[in-house]
Length: 307
Image 1 (cartoon, helix red, strand yellow):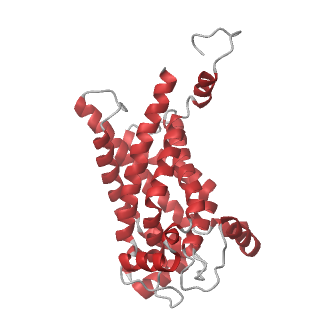
Image 2 (tube, rainbow, N blue to C red; image 1 turned 60 degrees about the vertical axis):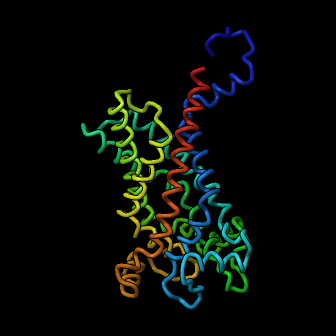
Image 3 (tube, rainbow, N blue to C red; image 1 turned 180 degrees about the horizontal axis):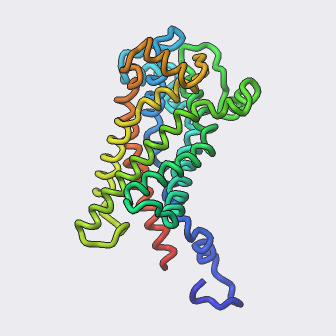
């Protein structure tokens, strides 16, 4: 550490700073993912239920998002809106932290094309695939816990660990990777979002005549995270419906093609946009919270390292 001889004992706080040096993006992503999950999980629960609903009598049929929320609260209290929180509170921070950290590490060393935006998109997609491969088991457990309905007498899963055990016992390791293929489309969603977000930040820096990736106003982060998420969601939302239905333990789909064909046959094109409205309401503030907290948390981490 600068300013200390090798023989000197480095104070604990300086050893801590050294330990986390270079992991500012990981820290920022963990903080952003954790905060957004706590704030936005109930919206995600509603989005998952609407996306999974193909009209089966096994599921409660909600008249509106408000009716869905009140029905859940009436049956299970406020905690009912937080079904599936345990795997979500692990998966989201881990995914965001790993995504931001790996992305920036790779991006700093890889420049395959002259177009910076193309490079951002490709690195974002590659990073997304790596992170999804590591976290898909958490996402499927979250989905299944969210799809345990209030009108079902006995719940199939008592919690996160029980869900893992039963998936492994009855479906094997491959059961933990259901929804992985449509999830790959989700990496495109994340890559598009991050590419648009970075483009807008770079544009703002050029407009202000300051170096790229310089700290911006919180209002800038709010606006750019909002715009990038809305655009990426509109372009890729159908994959979320397909992924949710493939991971649903209440349905028996044979694969991605089966989900696509049955959804289209039974519900038409609009079936692939079930839950899109609540997804926009959930994912937009989720992205805003994640990105704003991420930017400020990593700046704080960087300031510690610089000092």
